[in-house]
Image 1 (cartoon, rainbow, N blue to C red):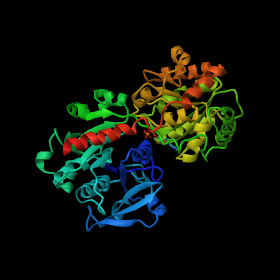
Image 2 (tube, rainbow, N blue to C red; image 1 turned 90 degrees about the vertical axis):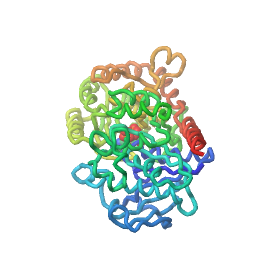
Image 3 (cartoon, rainbow, N blue to C red; image 1 turned 180 degrees about the horizontal axis):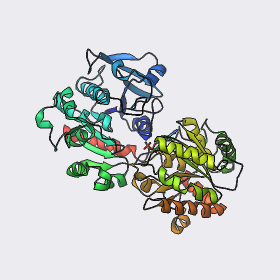
Image 4 (cartoon, rainbow, N blue to C red; image 1 turned 135 degrees about the vertical axis):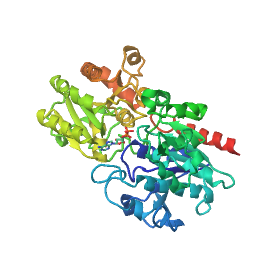
Length: 482
Ligand code: ADP
């Protein structure tokens, strides 16, 4: 099966969050099932620096305001099609935000162009490679299913849209649709309109042959007003075309036995070696030497979605109880400042690194005792999966993919050797505080804690579990088209 992924990020080349990890990992496992997955991505400066000698396979005289081309390259065993459109992507800084932290003023053009390019690749193919399935990821690729249909060229590829986070919908002024020649009859509340605006994600939800999201629980939650963010009705109207497929992780990149970012590599049979990583972490976060206290970590966007404000409310108790906390993240400036303030207030017990640091994220997974993920909503979440793989016990809100991937350490689950984390709900500071208290209790019982760590490290987190579901979905939707 020939599948074209269309996405705005892909690890290890360009990453701001979990979307990149998924887009970079799942094609490798799909390849073992016989699928030829290629990825269409914008050519950002960071990518331009690293890829060598890309081949031009398609040219545009004028792609929404300037000349552009698609260039093909193979890197890290992935086949990439890079949309080289300097007027849209050749600029420094964050891929979504300008220097003031606001969305780039022309994001509708930037990601709109990505969709136009995808539709042309779907219609014409590039270098004799034409996809049978176009798999669009998030709002940045949400127009592709409609643009592909509008081209009406013989055998139209089947389309899938995956929602990685419903909070980001790509809403733009209604006139935006003229850029893509979308006729008036396709600007209605049943199609592309969202309360007077033109919605990229909504368009995808209406026109894709199949819609997925990244966990079964989030799929159910998205059908409710609390989580559906206004699109619950559209999703409900799609019936069986909408399903949840839980994310996996790249177990080679995230492997504590071989991870070059760790000071000491280990397996579930050499857990004591983690101490060396912990010492390195303590020094990086200026934490005092306290080997008997649980060390909690956070690797996250610092936002209210991630419950970071709730965590701030509990820090004093965590420290009073004798715990330590290492926070790596960036995002909301108020939250960033609050974590830095907490690290000053609790010098030696709380450390904060504001920024994005992939290697440090690996070291934190390999050296801390528990990972805190108190999200208000969480489509899937990947950090808790990395934590499981590294024997760091995830402490998670019972929502979305967190509910699907972590097994709470209740007495029955401990007895059955299935427990690998702690869940709490509803999500507020008091329940988080209680969950943290449970960590202290469990941590004090060394053999139970070790058991949790081993269960965690043996939990099924690889793509072997879920990639076959995408494979089957591609088969089903292409069979329906032919
Ligand atoms: P989301 O995509 O909502 O941000 P996920 O848990 O699905 O959350 O994925 C986050 C990914 O980004 C993980 O790979 C995590 O390790 C990484 N990450 C988040 N913040 C940082 C950071 N400050 N430094 C390094 N990696 C980070």
